[in-house]
Length: 287
Image (cartoon, rainbow, N blue to C red; front, side, top):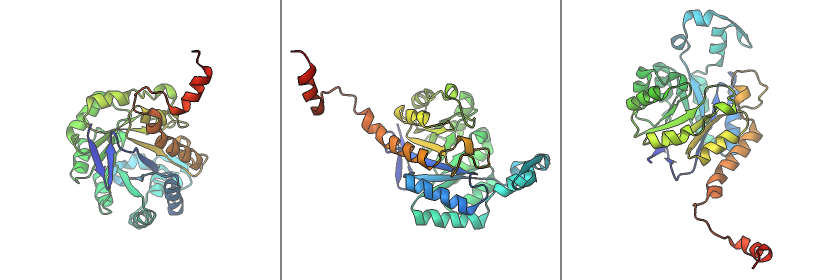
């Protein structure tokens, strides 16, 4: 199985799991909150943080933006979408803050203009959101930037995934198994898809989780996911559609800790009697 390099990190089989803290839009339009989420990711030992970037007038129709939707930003869907979107001033601060804190950052870009916008900050990679997996033009445009691409596969058929992989190629790609519900139920995790992907594709395989708790993400690493992504929040009761499927600091701390222990717990597969077992063996086993 291939590995790919994201900045100075190799990501692939046999490498340390690459852990992404998905801030997304959980900053609720607040740069102060975004910085607190970056701090949280750094303190918990994550490798990168991720945001989402949209050109609102390109991603949404006028009719969609005009729909009534009550939020802290106003009375229409457009008020909400614009209120959640950071501009150049905010991302300059985010870029400087992440460099100061020593953590990578990148974004899911929902349109070509957003790719160009984020490219100005020289991101280490790009994420393709599950909703955009079938947007061939966006896939090709993102690929043209020459950066590693992280592809989420929620709400997608195997045929759609194969088509996207054919466009992107496998040389600089990580494919993430994903279920696009927030939060997702245990009976819809289907984590054995990770093994299916590992057999089918010649590139690293990851997991983007939206579950309650930690178990599916930990199991994904045991099944061979070399990278995982989880939404994070300062408080799951905060306003916002992604908050309920996100991890607070304590949960993120436990997740990172336990992911780092998985290789040690899996071992090398050779059955041995450990030195620590010998006194127990001498005491309990009949001669």
